[in-house]
View 1 (cartoon, rainbow, N blue to C red):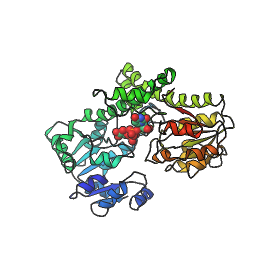
View 2 (cartoon, protein in one colour; view 1 turned 90 degrees about the horizontal axis):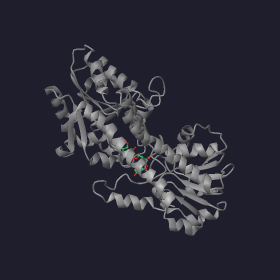
View 3 (tube, protein in one colour; view 1 turned 45 degrees about the vertical axis):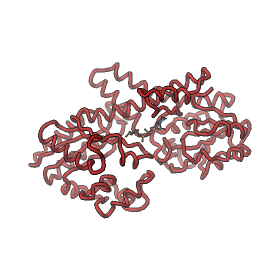
Length: 437
Ligand code: UDX
């Protein structure tokens, strides 16, 4: 919304939320999320045509276009628990819009939703009998965290789906005209509603599938002496395959991939397609296997036990340049190591201690974990380092100095194949990398 406000100076954009603290943060220089470049974009438009407010009803009333951008987490209760998307926040937005009224409106699903969610939104709006008419559109978001600003400034495409009726097509064109103020028309794709909703889930499923595919190959590389980065490079130069999203890692994380695949698979089950559901489930299973395998490798290298040993965890975010730890592979790795009675010395440049504690379901007094202000401090006195997030600063570690202060033999488990292997080995470490013998 900040990017729309920045580029569409004739439109007034108001972002509303129930949470006063969060709105206060958006109105300050201390934004509630860490995203490089975001503060500059917000500052360019805030107070001019970008506003943050808790006045939800008034804003609904005054708006021509409403983007529903709420959370759609995996359900943690009732039917579909652990798989289906929880749509109660989308539904309550739709009900609120219907209640408030205030004129004919375009309602845009920005949240990632299962196919046919728009039907529910349409029914709630059309049966409200408040005298106004609504067009429901789907406009899924494809930005990735950490690169959000560049992704929004210059997206591969913008996708807008809507009814193919005259009114639906007019509504689509209205939203196209917003994006068209900074994005070429040929990069704005328009489709019917269901294709747009399904494309978002499909895009994430395909991206995650590529990572699980290369991670599956990484296991074979470790067993055979092939090198996964060399394999990725060799296949990625085939223009039909392409080079992106072939970086083998300790596993994918983030709030989207797992959630969306589970949701896709749940939908397939719902529509009587168990074979399709099983096909996609395997992508998540392979990801779990990759995280388990990483821990197993740590165990194998450390004489089959980490009990009472201290391991430095470098990076807790699910990827670099974000303070987001949702579904981070670090959660599974750290939890398993704690089960094996290891002690963890954790450092992440951006993820707050409280987030790490709650992700690991630990309380603040737990003596098995300690938190540090830098990698060198975290590694001090440990038996091993597990690098789990590819933060740039980890490329500049003083490895010799770190090695000197560690227990021997000192292990370095590089879960991102980030660090120059020669430097790590020259410093004295036993090095273990993903997909390398
Ligand atoms: C993803 C999609 O990329 C984005 O289009 C969608 O809108 C939201 O979900 P995001 O989760 O922010 O974005 O990050 P992404 O860059 O896709 O990375 C997801 C996970 O995959 C991270 O844990 C990352 O480390 C991992 N990854 C990514 C790999 O392990 N290897 C790769 O080659 C790429």
